[in-house]
Structures are given as C-alpha cells and as structure tokens.
Length: 298
Ligand code: HMG
Ligand code: MG
Image (cartoon, rainbow, N blue to C red; front, side):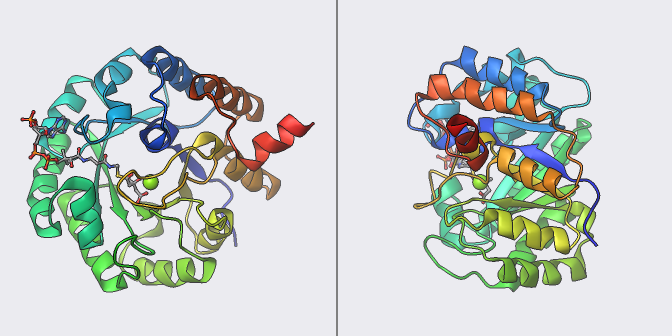
C-alpha cells in the first residue's frame, strides 16, 4: 500500500548551492527562491548559518533569509550548527531550524570539527533555545548508509545518534545518504530497524544520487510508508566535507515519478521547470536531471 501524497522538501538553495564551484550573486539566489516559493513546494531549505570560511557559497545567508519573499503556507528552513548560527537564524526569522550531525565519528569531525560527544551539548542548547523561541526544529543524521572515511556504519550507532536528536526535541529526522551509496534492500533493512523505534511520520529520507539509485531508494522507502523526501531541483548539490558526494536526487525527477504513480505532490510541473531553467544561467551550466534532459531534447 503506497502513500497517496508525499511532501517534497526542496534543499537546493542549501545542499545544492553549498557544493557548486560558482558562487552565484545573491540577487539571483533570492529571485530563484522566490520562484521556488510559487511552484507549490511546501518547504524550502534556503541557506546555512555556518562559518563562511567553511562554506563560502552560503556566506550571504543573512541577506538571503531576510530578502526572500515569505509565501504563506511555505516553510523556510536553514541549517544551524551552533549557538552563533542560531542567533543569526533567529534574527533573520527563519521558520524552522535544522540541526545536523553525523553517525560517523570521522565525517562528523570533518564536517563540523567536533567529536560526536562534543556535538550533543551544542545541539541540545540550539534545540532548546529554538523551541523556546517558538521555532520547530528538524534534525539530520548523515552517513546513515555509509561514510566516505569509515565505510559501513553500524545501525546501532545510527539509532543512538537519532535517539539523542529526538530526545533533544526535534520534530522530524532526515536520514542522509550523504555519499549516495544506499541500495533499496539496505534502505528497507535500515527503515525496518527505525520503524521499530520511531513513527514513520517523524522520518524523512535524504538521498544523494551519486550512483543513480536514489529513485529506487525512494520507491523502497514509499513501500515502507515514508512520505517525506528531501531533494534539489535539477539534482544540484553535495557535501563539501564528504569526498565523492554528488548532488541530491532531483526534485523534478522525484515529482515526475510520484505523479506518474498517482501520488500527489501539489507541485506545478511547469513552474518547477521554469525555476530549474532560471538557475542554470547564473550557475553557467546545464542541470542534469532526467526531466530537464528530456525537456531540452524535445
Ligand atoms: P570551528 O572552526 O570549529 O568553530 O567550526 P569555532 O566555534 O571554533 O569558531 C571558529 C570561528 O568560526 C570563529 O571565528 C567563530 O566566530 C566562527 P573567528 O573568531 O575565528 O573569526 N563561527 C561562525 N561563524 C559564522 N556562523 C557560525 C559560526 N560558528 C563559528 N555559525 C563550525 C565549527 C560548525 C562552525 C564549522 O565546522 C562549520 O561551519 N561547518 C559547517 C559545515 C557544513 O555546512 N557542511 C555542509 C552541511 S552538512 C551536509 O551537507 C549533510 C546533509 O545534507 C545531510 C546529508 O547529505 O547527509 C545535511
Ligand atoms: Mg545532503
């Protein structure tokens, strides 16, 4: 029994742009996010309040967050690694705060310069203060299906980190296939373990498409009852602190697959296509999603 409707969370302006070689002008980002707001997407992760030395492409986080149009019904989220980031995100009146860490010790260190144990109290304080300010908080756990430094990560380790994040008070956890190594059978095995402990409504899946298996992995997740997926328009993206991480699964391809399967996404296909084409110009490259390739060959 497949779900009747799915929530697609657009992470292109954050996960997509953080790994692009070209830093695009802030006006283009703002205009692009405004276009995304009118596609029917209910959720847009617009930036990260991280150290700009670590992620130069998102150094304009504050300006982006304070200049975009806030369309009613759309949730505008941003990544926050620590107290300093939270202060800025609150000042910019971000709707939802996303905290993030890794199930793998070495990826956590590479990505946020802390051990897993050192990370917990930092995120705990961020979540506590964000909730006190009336914000909802989402959590990410990275390297759920494999780590660029350590390879296989034990499911018990992933569950332990996830449990900690839920204890802090996050409302949803996004399970990251950071370097796109997952396969559908593994997804089902991992979800089986997760669903013993956490309700499916609280879980999202975040697939990178490094090996072309992201749509198959989404299908496997749908069969397990998952109804929230992260994606980037046109397949933009990657993690700069995970060698070999390529883009997220493309929003337009996910949307196509779901609609063809009779699963509602509430997205306007034409407007989505226009938004994808819009960002190709400042990026100075063609996006490589299947939907865009089909469109440009017609
Ligand atoms: P650090 O260097 O250990 O931080 O970085 P620190 O606390 O020691 O401070 C050092 C300097 O950074 C200080 O400045 C701070 O003020 C500044 P200085 O005194 O040297 O001039 N600083 C900040 N500046 C701006 N905003 C802040 C901030 N915090 C400190 N929030 C830190 C620690 C976490 C900040 C750093 O490692 C960092 O920014 N990391 C971000 C890495 C990142 O964004 N990675 C990509 C996102 S995660 C991802 O892509 C995975 C995901 O998609 C899921 C998946 O696919 O698996 C979510
Ligand atoms: Mg990612």
